[in-house]
Image (cartoon, rainbow, N blue to C red):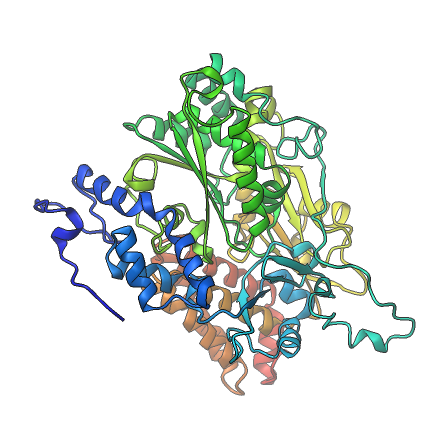
Length: 612
């Protein structure tokens, strides 16, 4: 691979490093601010196009090679090492050659439960290629991804950009799962092609996030009046009165984040986080595909509140339709005068750019997401400094999940007090909850905070489909945690769930039935951590792999008891020493799983028999 020498003065354009300057892990300077911003601008302004450039290079001959890296470095003015870092980090580029037909198959929690992973070898047989490989003639390749957002109709695939879901995978592969069913008397070949639409409903009398899809509230009804006569203080006041917190999992108060960003010197940015990577979650995909204008209006209102002129939304590459719908909505909003220069004849300038990711779960963490927007490796950055002061391009940035942004127009229109009356005093408002394929009525439900999980599972979801029996519920995605059936009276609130050893996260509920072996779901949890760790810190990078080794020891006679015992010190290290919430989340999820499946795992250890 061609390389070129990288000198420190090349990165700082001749500036002399002063005492106290420190080089961050992504090669940018923390101090002084001027040097930091200058370098970030150099890397970042062109960087929003870097992932698309690499995607195009890959499309030309199926891979990103050394010549591509050198050409990208010349075109963008980056060191080759920076381009190489991005190209080798993201799953979409790093997994080798892609065939002319590239198929992505979901390995997420719902897909795993629905077929116990057997959909993957069946697809391998149909395509004639193994997972992670490309056919010798370059005709087809198969890539595993952790979620495609079809958890309500799993298992799922993307054939290019054509989705297929359900037992037949939409017919994209000649119904590879139907062979065994044809032995059933009276079997009729299914007619369904493609993927099912996302089912959704509201359990709230006056929907908020689903106001456009169910409540008949048109988007962009608030924005024109705000730019004409609104005030930043008024919007911040309403958001503060609403008690709105981030819906991406962290739950940070939105008004505090916006106020902190607004207090920093201009220029400032607002960013929409559409990198919904939690297996089991697909509410963000629903919003981006079916009501994108509401997200854009929420982002515009956020920009007005913090004094930003530019917004960006990162959409995961596994959601191609969402990216297309958002791009189309941006163009429509510009044509209608909602975006651009002097919006609706006012002094407000604001525009939005849509950036597509390249396969990284950790890119959903806000500091990693900002790196991804700049085309860099989506590695987590230590905080402080926080994005509110040092965000995109090293400038003040407010990052909010798209579900959070979708609630903002309703709050500004109806008032923060009206929103605060919904939900629970400790957590006001509503939340989108996603139910997985094993439920009788899977889909997205908007509910108020504080409702019992049993209401979600039995009343809204209808319980499990026959003949399945509920064994556990994965709450809040792979970093959330597992609950037993006798814990379903817990309310949908962060604190009680945390006390029970789970986390709210995106509020997805994946039902695990009793046919799934304990050792198999434990290995699945560790495999997710291993695949998606960004590698920035040793406890997470090495610890997740160590967890996989321990699971494999469970299968060896005489080693199971020790392997179970060795989990505890490993989980403690992950929880205490990990750089970000990913390692701590893996620890939380595995610890809760060990608790829920304790009897099964200990019985297997005593008998020396694998729980499969």
